[in-house]
Image (tube, rainbow, N blue to C red; front, side):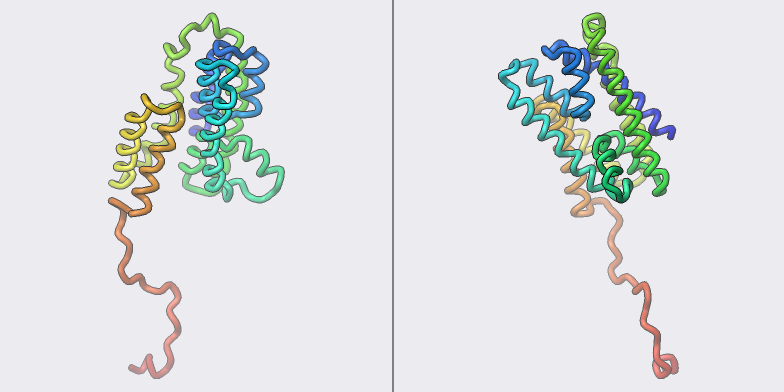
Length: 237
């Protein structure tokens, strides 16, 4: 619950930036709020309004393509959270709506099945409700806010993820993955559209995990879990 509240509030506050930037990009208040309600994926939303701001409505197809590309990461999250959500059609529909970076990160950071379920749903709902409220606020007072980046709201969301990551850095492999992924993201951020550097950084974890670099060595001859019972002659020997 503490992790859900911390991450949810920090991320929801960032919605003010989106609301202000969306209105500045040419969307009206209702279009901005509808986008947060239906699309509800921060990276995809910022990518969409970023392209529209630079190219106008004529850049709509490119903006949509970029948003869809960034949104594919949520499908990968769904593979990891499927067991956490459990069966049931409507339950999965609702879970799909809030399967985002924050809900997935909080859920997978928990040690037990019950805490993972609580982390997923509570984080997703807090972010959904808070993000839509702050989107409306940002759209309404965008002109009065001026440069929203000056308030550090983007840093608040990133700091929440660092707080989730820190307790997991106890072995060499996670530490190496974190350092290498951060370096890749920092190098690519100036040259790629928002969201893509994070996807590229995730490849670091895939490569390191696939080859088990710096990980625990696999046992050479693991003992069988349920050895076959010995016969009377074998026991005599």
